[in-house]
Image (cartoon, rainbow, N blue to C red; front, side):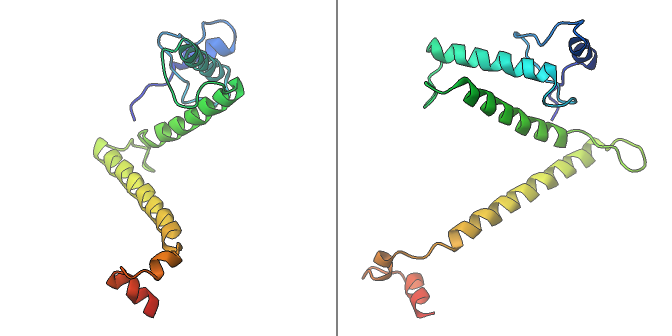
Length: 155
């Protein structure tokens, strides 16, 4: 993922209270620093405030948004930033043991492999929940059973 991170010198200056914070018109997170840095906390505050203002002004209609507490939104935006950062970090070029940066082709293969593994895990987890669900008694005793359903009764 090629999305940018906030410039280190800007983040450092803000942390030292000698520079400006995140720009609300061009909001960017510090993906390389800790999630609880002053920069990221301020960026999340700006994002949350803009979102809440838009909902109150009825600019956005989002199901079940009205009446949610500010703490709810803070938690929701923080969790979203955690997920975003996790994917951003996975998508960065890695350094090989030889000290060289991986090529674009190696990067594409690595990211594709990671995506395939995540999809495989998701399929396994969803299969486990659906395989354990028994047939309902209504379907088991119905006169309109399929051959497959009838074969389950016999085993």
